[in-house]
Length: 252
Image 1 (cartoon, rainbow, N blue to C red):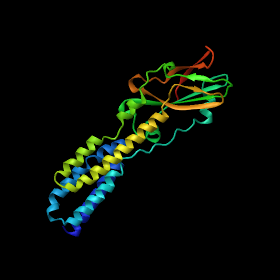
Image 2: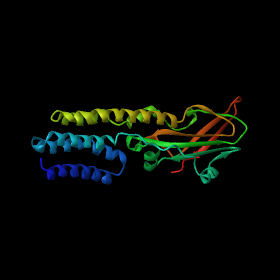
Image 3: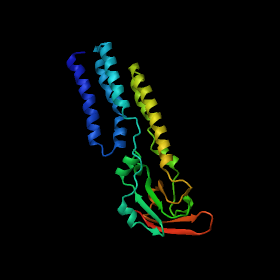
Image 4: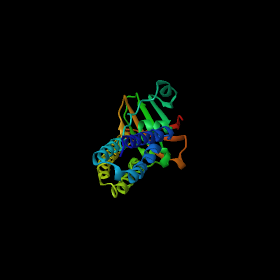
């Protein structure tokens, strides 16, 4: 293959990936579109591999490995505490404040690195500031919204290792070196899914005791079809039967 032809393939791959990125409205759509890139590369190789020298072929496949596997990752920001204004305006009972924030698509991508809304789940950040001298019991079944389990939501937004492996496998039937990016991508996808599972579990709200002079900051997941921006939350004082009911309107 001529230098001109070799350069053409390199430019095509770069331009194709760039066009996918800038034309995609979110990172998940970019990842989905990128999955078809092995087919595009295979089409080029089918018309040129007979004329291509072995070293050139391996060089291009190595470049493809670096380009394609860079997208299988999980990078989410930690949860932030609400602003002081939101805390001040939040429902308050004596020394306890409760702030609820409904995640936008941008929030999902920032704090969960996945478009959870597209999979049918609405994340809500729940922040409770206990400035009292008492401990309070927080329980998920005392929230008047139907909740989805975080592990179920995580499973829905996993990077599809099967789909990506199939895409590489189609090319590997013709060009065996494509098995290399298949293996690398499979490992990186599995690692990304494991990191996602751990982060979703860490950020998800759980039954627990909110100690005096402490804060609670976590996420609950509500099926989109059942989402309401107003709901009730009940906290029970530890060691007594007294409870506090908060009527909450989530900030959107």
